Every structure is written in C-alpha cells, then in structure tokens.
Image 1 (tube, rainbow, N blue to C red):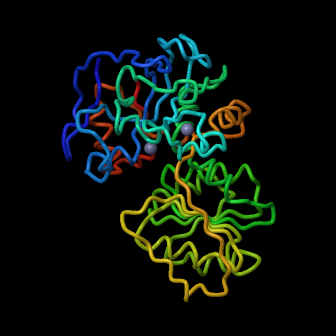
Image 2: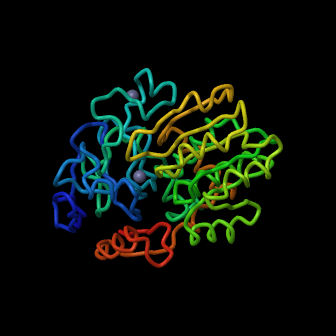
Length: 344
Ligand SMILES: [Zn+2]
Ligand SMILES: [Zn+2]
C-alpha cells in the first residue's frame, strides 16, 4: 500500500509498504478514506520533534472505515465509519478516567500515530486501543465534516471548554490558522458578547471576515488598543492564545483585563517569559493545554446537529498519490490554503 514516510530530516516520500496487521487484541485496522496534513507533520519533517521515528508513516488527522478489529475491541466493528484520535490512550489510568487523555500514563500513550508508530497518510492504519482511539461517525456526517474532529477541532473544543466563557465576555483569540479557526468555532458555541480575532496574515484575516462576519478582526500591531476600546472593562475577559509566535504570549496577557483568564494552547519554538513584576496586581489566571481528544463523540454530535462546521477550512483536495504536491502547497502557504484533504 502507499504510505507517506518520514525518511530523514527534511525528507518525506511516498513508499510502497506492507498493509498493517493486528498486533494486539485491542488494535483495529482502519482503511483511510480521508486524511489531512497538520503543522505538526511539518515539525517532524524539519526535525523539531525529537521523538519522531525515522521510517514511520506520517499523518495523524484522518477518518476511515474499520476493516478489522482484535478480540479485545468492543466499541467498533468492521464496516463502521470512524474518526481516528490523534492521541493513543488507555482509558483506564488516573488521567484517562478524568478526561486528561493527553496525559495518559501508558508507555504507548500520547501522540504516537504518525510520530512514534505508523500514521494515516496511507491507505491503511493500525490504531492501538481502538475503543478509545476511534469514534463512530454518525449517519449523515460526511468524511469532510468529520476530518478535523480527532486533532485540531478537539484542540479548539478543549481550549473553549477550559476557558470558562460567560455570555457577557469579550473573548480574544490570537491566531487564525487552522487551529485558531477551530477554536473560534468552538468559542462561538458559548455565545459570548464579543469575539475578537487577532491575525497578522491579511489573507487569513479576510477568511475570518468573510466566513464569520459577526467576529471582529484586528492585526497584532493594533490589537491591544482595539481590544481596550472594544470591551467593557478595558481588556478581554478571556484570551485564548493559539498563535505561538515570538510576541504573542506577551500580547495575550497584555490584552487581558485584570482578573481575566488567559488560556495558552499555542506550541512555542522557544521558552516564554512570564514577567511577574509587569503584571503585578493584574491577578490573571493562566491555563495551558494542547490537544486533549476526550470529547470526540460530543463534537461529532454538534456537527450532526448542524452547530459546528469546519468544512470551509478545506481549501484544497488531492489524491494520496499527489501528496507531495499537497505538502508543497500547505508548507509554503500557497494559493490561500488553510487545510488540505488527502483522499485515500
Ligand atoms: Zn496535528
Ligand atoms: Zn490512560
């Protein structure tokens, strides 16, 4: 089968590999019908994910059809359409039982697919702990509608969930890349009074303006002043930082009003400074959290109910055999790309 493979620093290639097989009773084999490329795949390519294993098939955002299950799998069966979770988790440890699946203590837990074990930019993928790693897709929800549920939409949902948003709030979201837009959609479900999105790319700012006209959009240079004048208490009540650029962590807490909540979902290249003397008396609460894919069934329910739609993010579509071209477009942000869909 075709499998897009991490060969060495800077090099991915489409190879012919054997079809994966069940290795453990809790495994399932999924035929991938639609996948996507994530910024984390690019981090692997450029060597900034030290845990990534050379030779593995990349890709951790996908949907498909269950082909085969091990004896210990009870939640899904062959023929089921499923979302694959980016996280591998046991469902039984202290953290899993509390919904903190990102912190699963299983030695194989965490982001394994397409990083430490073969992922889904391929025709088939083996999913360990299939009962927790796969979520059935409701009838009437298409592959494109479900594509981001296991990764970037789970991230946005988690970010909105932990941010304690209330109806009188002004919420500032920093960054309107794919995860920023997923976060925006999940914040919109909480119906705060105002949402401001800060984005430096004019193209992405225009995307937000045209798709979500009720949202205010501002460039980083004007963000602080804009949020001050477009909020009830001279600053955002909730700030969600998704961008992860050099200056965006500082921007996040600077735009927050006193006693605000600042949620940091962004992944930074460098350590960030928490200048406590500068924020003395501001009484901020910080929360951090990357993807925590414990709400996939709830998210799929919202999609089925017409309350959540990430299909506008899919700006480009390619067959698996043309995945090199899909990467070229995505990596270089050509042609207004937000996300690409790769058809199996
Ligand atoms: Zn990802
Ligand atoms: Zn666990």
